[in-house]
Structures are given as structure tokens and as C-alpha cells.
Amino acid sequence: MAKGTDIPADFGALVGWDHQDLGDRVMVRLQSTQHADLGSDSTLDEFRYFMTKNQAVVLANYLYSISERLPQAKRKRGWFR
Image 1 (cartoon, rainbow, N blue to C red):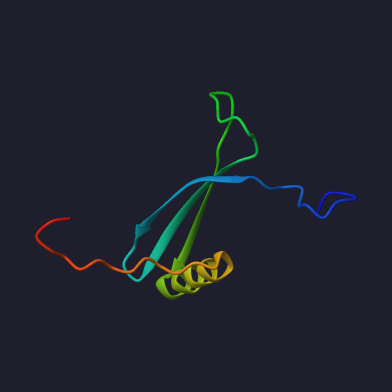
Image 2 (tube, one colour):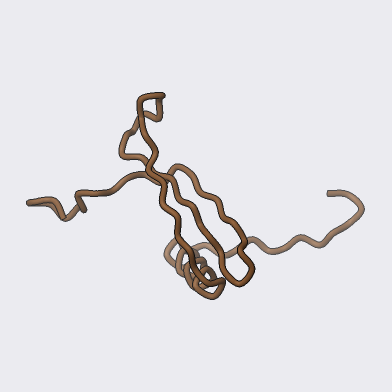
């Protein structure tokens, strides 16, 4: 924590993510920056997290609960999309 504040000294804004299915595990890649301007001079920090698919489900459910949202319902397939 930074001195005199409740804000951690090392934080940034999430600007991108993706994942890779590794069978019974998943790798989630998160990109963040500490700069408001994403111009050519800004650098992205990249973090890779490996977790089981059960851990991924727990994380997803947690994120849904704190955002007070529900996952999108799957649409029925029809002739037209």
C-alpha cells in the first residue's frame, strides 16, 4: 500500500484479456496499463494466470455476483441469426 492512502501502490486499468484452453486447465492473459493515454509511449503490463476450469468457474461466478449481472442466456438456434 502507498503511504497515507488506501490505494495500492501497484495498480492499473484492465485494457485487454484473452484465454487459451489447455484441456483440464485454462490460461487467462490479462493486460493492464498505469497510463490514461494508450499512445505509442505507454507500455502494457501482461500477466498470465493458469487455473483449473473449476477455478475459472468460481472466478466467473464471483465477477458476476459483484457486478450484479447474470450471464447471457444462450439463444436458441434458428434459421436466421
